[in-house]
Every structure is written in structure tokens, then in C-alpha cells.
Length: 118
Length: 110
Image (tube, rainbow over all chains, first blue to last red; front, side, top):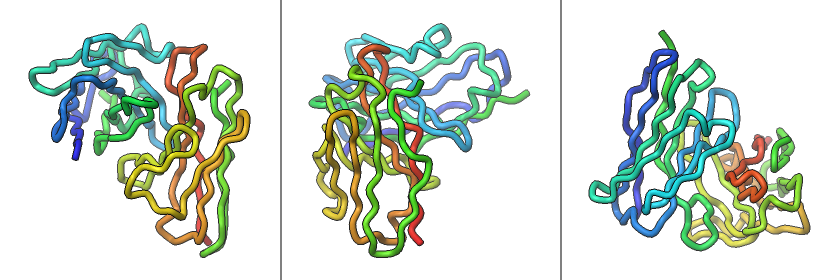
């Protein structure tokens, strides 16, 4: 059974960079696309972007200027960096896998709350 | 503006049937199919349906999804208290080159 686990600081100061890592277990990171999705308090889901195991990326146009994703296949991990954060970036951040057939998000991490505050 | 539109809330009685809808706002959304997710407070999203009408293994047969034109639907029969949750549809928007979610529907089981 594929499992995903997010890790990283739960508190980030305004204007700094949010950094999260997703560790995949029970399966290989290879041959799949992997996404970050977030949910601000009281709001809906927002796709942040995806990364392919090859390193190919695609980001939400509204966040593109601040997002960087990377992948480390040797560790079965992929990461998210979001720069110049504000309180609006406070959210539960999920990592998830895209199914190889229709690209629906079939496996999700538990999510981690990141709060932006001084 | 959103690529997918969902009603904010639906309320139905115990053991009744609820149908949740999701409308794509353009022909560029959902060409590879629409998926449905369930979110319970404090838990990660769970995939309920993919590619318009396919149910992953382990998902209750009380749930079924369909699509007609730009509108996708998720039907839940014999509503149970545990069905009370937020439901999101999702799909690829080829014009934005982005994965999009509907605003979510809060299902209340009375």
C-alpha cells in the first residue's frame, strides 16, 4: 500500500520560504506525477503544482512565480518550496500521487498545517 | 472563474439518496475525465471515483458517479451518518495547464 508523509516546519515567518518534503513508502516514486495541494482554513482545495519523477514540473499559474518543486528518486522523496509567504499561504498542505492512467489523485498524505505568522 | 462549479451545500435525510453535481465551465476542463474526492474533517482526501464513472476498489457500492456533457454527478444512496463530509470534484484544465478543484459541496445527513 502506497503511503505518503509530509514533513517540514509548522510555522514560517512572513516573507520567508516555506519548505516541505513528501516521503513515499510502499511504492516507487518512479513513473508517476506527484502533486502538492493545499487547503486554507475554512476554504476549498487548491492545486499548487506537480512534479514528474523525471523532474518535469508544472505549477499553478497563480503561484508560479513563488513555487519550486524538486524530486530525489534515490530517497523516494519530492519537495516544495514556496517563497515570500504571507498569511494567505497558511493552509494544510497535502502531497498526493497522480494515477498513471487518468491522472486522478489516488493516494494522499495526511496533510500538514503550515502557519505563516511572526 | 473557477473551472468547476459545485453547490455549496446539500442536505438529505438518513437512508435517502443525494446527488451532488459538478459543472465544468468550459470545454477545456475534464477532457480526461472528472474525479470525486471525499474529505472528512481531520482526514486526508479519499478518491471516490475517477475518469467520470469508475470506482476504486474498497469504495462502497452505494456511491456511483456519472457524467453528461459538462456536468458530472456523484450519487450516494442509502445515506449514512458517515457520509456527512465535504465532496470535491477535480479535473485537468487544459487551457490553464492546471489541475482544478470545484469549490466543494458540504453534504449534511439529517
